[in-house]
Image (tube, rainbow, N blue to C red):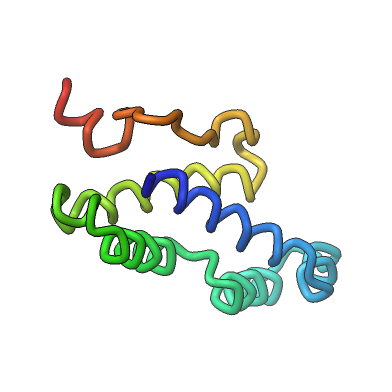
Length: 118
């Protein structure tokens, strides 16, 4: 549930950022330090940052007592970081959307559980 919530929220924020007029103007700029600063500012404005997605994951954990009582505080942060890393690769063109997918119902293939199973 946390993976899917974070993924949906991250993709929503990415879409909002990409639809903005400022983003389109920034993409048209020549590659230099000003362009990088502008992209960083846009990520800040739209909350497309790892820390913002981690905060969202903690909020989801705390609002769902059926989940919050069964996982520690580090698992949602790790899941959110994995989701953000995948979406960031998609954002900068290093991956495609097929690599960023929603988990199925009852799936345990989250970031934290995969590590423990190995």
